[in-house]
Amino acid sequence: MLTLRYRRDELMEDHDYAEPQVIAGRRMHGGFLADGSYQPPRTKVRGPAIDAWTKALRDRGGELFDADASLLDGVRLPNVAQQRVLLRNGLGETFWNNLTIIGKIEAKGRLLADITFPDLQDVIVEDISEMAIGHLNEGLLVAHGLDEGGLPDQGIGGHDEMWFVARDLAFGAGAHPDVDPPENIARPDDERRIPELRPEIEGLVSFLANLLLIEFRAELGFSETQAVLRTPDLWGARAEKADEAADIIGRIRTDEEIHVSSLRLYLGEIRACTFRTVDGGTISGAEVIDRFWHDLVRWAVVDKPALEADQQRRVLEERIRAHAEADRVLQEFDAAAA
Ligand SMILES: [Fe+2]
Ligand SMILES: [Fe+2]
Image (cartoon, rainbow, N blue to C red; front, side, top):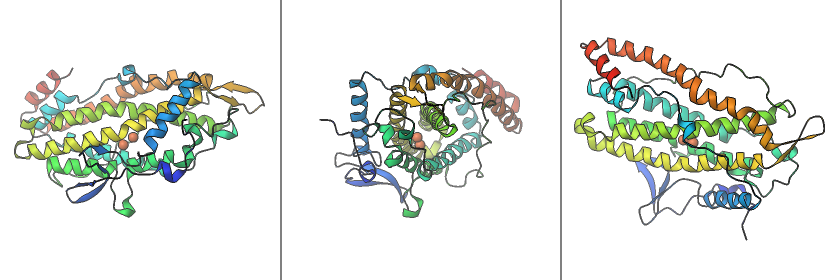
């Protein structure tokens, strides 16, 4: 018998850690079991619950929402080789900024813990009380938000703090100035795609789809960051600390797995459900998602990366221009383009 209903406090439960995660004297979320393995926060019950809901969805003939490597497409600037050229030439600020900005974007993810989302049961024909989407406001999105932004008032760091600590291990605290994320490049069109649904329901579904794309694509950037940290000659005497920083990023990547699997599950469940429309009819969840997914993906993997690369290119050229051997560095930088 699968357990498919959970209380909020169950979904928030931590593993019984033998050791909490403490880095440089700061308490972070998650911890280590007696065998030394790292376990993400709030996954003791949430993990098996996601598995149980996934199995139930498959038993009903449904499937997790598809997310494959094609979602990772798009130009990336700088790539790992270019980042290495910059660091080798004493231009570490770009990578420092990268780590700071990721940390600050993670902090914004705490928003998920602070807002109440519309109840999908109001508009879904099927009983969702035994589905993950019936638990979004019952712990699932709070847990997700706390993974990103931590519990600062309890002195427990989440992903934001983990990035900052990793950065300071690699570079030394205060090696470069603090920096804020560039303004998010907003998608130019925000027209309603599913006027059959109340705006806040369309908003929730497209929010979840957007979040899946962001989380799925972030994974690639995180692994590239690890590759740079694990290039010992870039870090000289700090190589061991940079390696420890890469371990921290590895734990963030482990934490993120449940974000991707739960978002694929929510969207898979939504696809298999039927929505009540504002005019008293119905529309299938598959149609709801299909109507905006294609455009959303094109924006995330083609248009937005190109705009971001343009913006980056201007910043990087200016930074390289300030180098005493700017022409040589720029040449090396361009030669390292994939
Ligand atoms: Fe995160
Ligand atoms: Fe995440």
